[in-house]
Image (cartoon, rainbow, N blue to C red):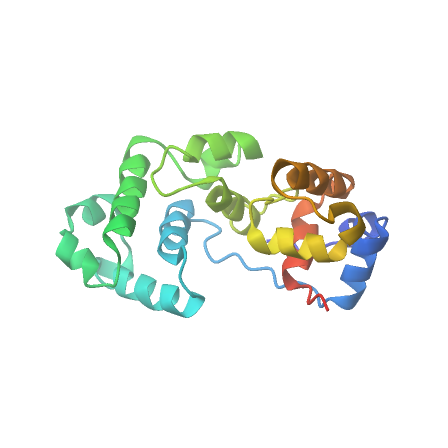
Length: 207
């Protein structure tokens, strides 16, 4: 994964509020555990939904331990019984979602070679048919696995909360579509480095 470069920081600093956030915030950690394995990244993202990082790590480790070499090949995953998968700590719903990823991967390519040739939005639309995979999930994949530089995950609650704190004059009293419209407008000048801006917002400790 590429480091946060000086061009991104210089560009974002043209927004005085973002400049202050960058100055007050340690450089975000860039992580990319599954750079060459989008399939595994999707499985991990589903396991992680709506639970703590610690719990997700434990469940995903137990899940992988069910397979040879700790790798849940799609065919092998689909052969596992519900009881076997439940033994790893997975809910019935997440089991269905994991099976959906496996089924999709057997029908359509989800490797880097295929996805790297697509635009951000094309990847979103390509992966949305998988049960349990929503826009937010794909945007996290785009940011942290595929390393796309201009992703703005407006549906992320933390991003919205931090922007409300950072830009109170523009957002005061706004909700719903009106709020989304203003947040998109605020983020527009951050192009083509909205991923970097979002990473800083996640790490920024607003006071």
